[in-house]
Image (cartoon, rainbow, N blue to C red; front, top):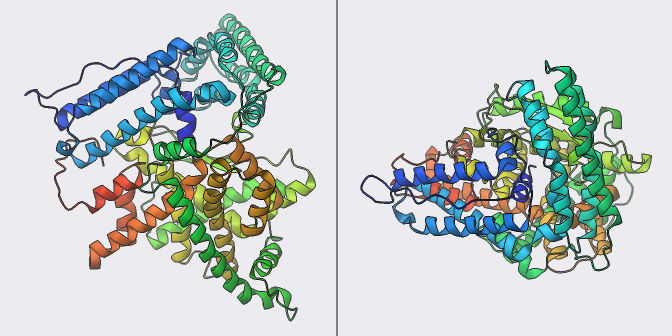
Length: 593
């Protein structure tokens, strides 16, 4: 999931220079002035960035599609530098705690975008940068406005699709092969949004038939442009493709901007390596306990890794059928909800809908298996979607491998992570935060870290009934988060090969071959995102221990959870500063929690 942060960043097309700084009535750049500046900053952002606006639920500019170009990037850089200058005129120490967090988030985001444009230059080598289908699908599928209005916006927005993809073809140079293949798959899988879904929606509308014909004609032209872009990518000469690996320097920089951790990428890699050793020790103890149950008097392997693998492989044979995979997830949601309420872990909002659905075609190919799509901060009443990957394209052997990975125990943990009390609950809280900045620039390490933290919290509070099989399979699942960090760093910063990665994942993370292959694919089309899980988890656990000591007899788990979540999707290091700060300077004039 949520992984939306990077996708949103890549949707950016053009920024314009910001208006002059806002100041208070006395000419002082105080909290009130900063709030005005934030509003001006966002208003200008959405006007020139309609795709991003749509994705966060701001629909004033849904009908616009801006064509990416060199001129566009020049305006981007002008915007980044102008607003970094504007921010520098505020004295951060004089702002409320919540406004300080917003300041730091805005500053980091602008620096990140400037770095991405001037140094990383993904627009040249990452063809997935140019996928417009997700925004169109959002307009079509979300019910934030009357159908006819959304369809007309869709129609108007399509006008620039041919020019958009012509420009994209000019921008791409020596693209990464893996990202090129992913872009081809996503465009061909998602083109049905224009070839079928749009027509189906038109039939349900009251738009006159003559107007519908015009709209369908434009949709056909758009589909041709999308297929044409996929054909261009398939046929382009690419004798010197860029390596998908970022390299140490770019990796360290991207980690700094995207994760916003108190730790460096090297420190997190080292911590994950130590955590792996601890998890292996715990898994070995549980496997020794379970061995007689499943193997009777058969000799127990002396090698602990072989022992763990045999026990896990036996337990993994208990899984649902492929046809019942999604329905099993649907049945687990109310069970998890009831447990969270019974244990009083966090307040649940019954008015916020959660919809389990098949993963949309335009999201295909990420290798994630499952994800959560939440409503944007401006669209608080929208649906949250639990996207379930399809097994339709798998061979029987691949499907069996996949289902063994998501066996009866792991499937429950998956639902905890993606939904309750994981991503779904956290993102509902994030949308309740008055701070748009914290929601719009949501920190992926905090978001994913919360979901991993939620898994352990559920088991620590008795979910699974102290079942050793559930504990063992959770450790295996938790090992994914730990090994994600080790894998991502090792591949992108240290040059780990595919064979080394598959061996590492199957032997040290005990993953099924299909899962390991999917994770390799994922690490070739993403970078740093896989660090989010363990980094955020570690920082949240560290913070909870500090908070527990600070609160003493007044500590409650629910109190910590809801206090932590009240800050929206801010980086954990900034939430830590706010929660542990003894000075209650915050005057309430900010936009924070």
